[in-house]
Amino acid sequence: MPLSDGPGHISVDPDRPRTVASALKRSLLAFAWISALALFGGFMLFAMQIETVEEPFTKRADGMVVLTGGAERVSDAIRLLASGHARRLLITGVSPGTSAPEIARSVGGSAQILQCCVDLGYFALNTAGNAEETRRWVREKQIRNSLIIVTSSYHMPRALAEMRPRLPGFELIPHAIVADRLRGKAWWNDLELLRLTGLEYVKFLWAELRILARTVMAT
Image (cartoon, rainbow, N blue to C red; front, side, top):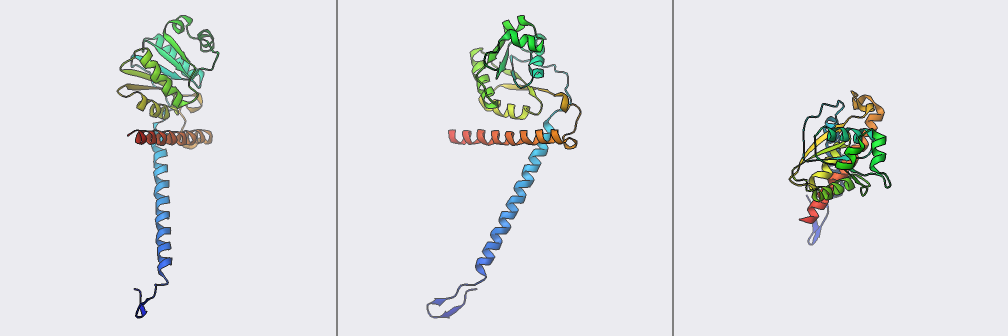
């Protein structure tokens, strides 16, 4: 404890600054370890959500949206539409200038189905844009209760994270497309798959933080 050198004089313990610095260092180190463990645990949970086997799809909904990024996504969505799983389909994130007949030729879909029951969205440039374009579309087409979301399996968590706050009250039904390079593979055994999963996890976290910040600012 501090010792007095005389009346009006109080000496400072010379070890106190080092003690405070040591405690601060330990706190920062503990925080770093906890953060690292939380990130690792979150990554494990995220990776376990990614499907590597595509199951038969049997559900139905009022509408369906497919996020562009691969021909498999669009062809599967059109096949589901033709099978009666939804009454209308939005293809969001279509390149400017691309027409319905061109899509029909590229994915082998029926031109008649694309003409009657498919809408093309040219606005979206990213996943957040896909969600915003979907929000506008469901209002315009008066789709009320449920929506099938079609995208790649590794992209599905982020797509749902962006869709949910923009479509409150909707039942969002995921239909994850498993790319050939992911089928039956374990992410921890494939360096390219590990890189893809890690990158998507970072994007997912950023989306969640951005959505949380927007929610807090709105309240």
